[in-house]
Length: 181
Image (cartoon, rainbow, N blue to C red; front, side, top):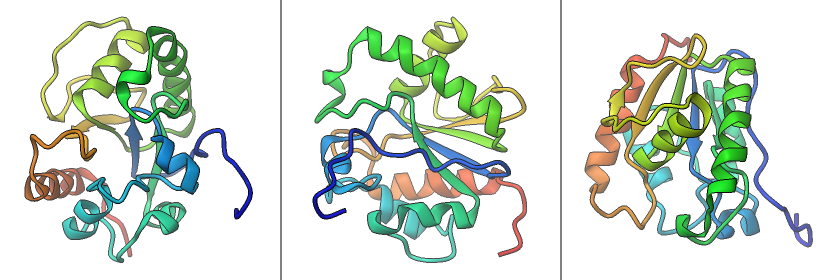
């Protein structure tokens, strides 16, 4: 990938996944690096590794290997920005129905949104619902998929400590189907 410039990050989706982790949109840093959560200040990889959700230590360069452990990656909006404030209503209107179609097609056991903003936007623009959900397991399904919302691990979301993020990933892990790893 030395000289290749990506427009966005690829989806890491396949049938039979336990969990699909859904970000709001890729950061410009992640797209430049070609890997999810590549900003060194983002706490995703540290929280994931400490949580035990996967049995090996992973990093941005190994993001695709999450699928080997039943976990996929995608975004509500595929257009990269340096901050969420760079998104507009048209991005949400376009991205949410596309995400819904992907989730209905791939049917993960759990669709897991990173952040309340991401899930609220999904509800509004894909389901036509205006709700103020809480973190954790949601009452709505997407097809057959359960829905779970985690705090966003972005460095902009300092409201949640690393320890709190680890705890949320552990709670997510308790919902996942039994895996023979």
